Length: 62
Image: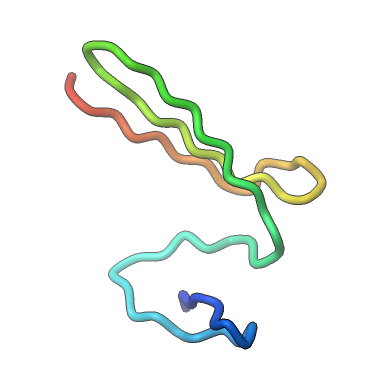
């Protein structure tokens, strides 16, 4: 199940085609960007402890 938090801090269920939710605590998103012929974004979700709890990369071009 996927959800978003309401202003009342209550989870509100979403309907999505896919979901990769693995961690429901507080986290920090770190984003690295690389320019060039094949630009890339690297996104990592870090727990409060600094442990990486999720990661994905997006590439454009070749």
